[in-house]
Image (tube, rainbow, N blue to C red; front, top):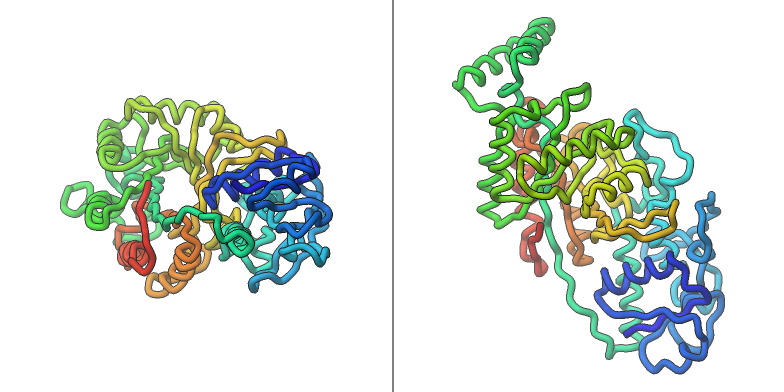
Length: 444
């Protein structure tokens, strides 16, 4: 057991110590505020306070974790392991030149997203506003790096302490915004599609729609058999997120009552996990979220516990409170639309900490790192170059025995129009993630 001394065992300190030691490093720890107990302890111990006591491991503490509330912080930085690292400390006795607990808490709590910021066109906190992007470490899982730095210090001072081995994991996830491009759209939407193509003199799509509706060619978004073949070939355990909402400007899936849409959803659930893809306005209209979860649950005849926001519209803490109120236990929305990398600085699942209430919750956040639309639509990367951007992210995660989560869409794999070649990117990415250069594991 590792004993941690601090002058005040706040909720924030308890949360981040549990995350780093119990969840990430998988070792037991205890917090004490009694100096005598700390001095008397014979095993591995860490002093997290304003001053060193004896010759123990000492992390000079910033004030962040000792106060409640949310404030604009004057954060100083120091170069550490080639990274411009926040919460620099200036005590020469500190074993690290920064406060790893404050820095980790700031990242995983998404502290900066509670402060005033300029929302993008979809009401989101953009990557370019984040500390990680501005300081150049968005593509580094810094919380994992800092956790391993703590582990290495403990092993240096206490080689008798054993840390259980961690394993790299790969979780492929698929968002189904539109189950089909042309099929099952109904008369009005189908005629509207024809008229729109005609007004643009787009005869290619007119012909394609006609062939699909006549049963002469597969629907370009019908890539489910391809996904199933990959799942079986590589022993994957994917998670599908279904947009199951009333039709709207940003919600254009098949009608929620269509029998064949229900059959598709049930078939996916036969061989994979299925979660809800809450529609565009559910942050502002929690009643719609409740209805969507209830409908999908009724179709599958099981509880819905996993979720990912449509358009990645995460508004803290509202989005996660809405999910908690509906007994959602796992969310997969933690990532940026416009940039690859680590929005919360971590490649492990972690419990959501509600900063407004200053308390930990039971909602687990599963951060993703790479999205197809980020590469193609925001970064303008072509299929032939995509892997050169994906592989370094996977390498970072493998080096730290973390979890790689990819976000793809069924339509991306259709090998048509702007997505030509992206089905190959997906399979090559999968093969690279599962390459046995380190011990790997595959989990849902």
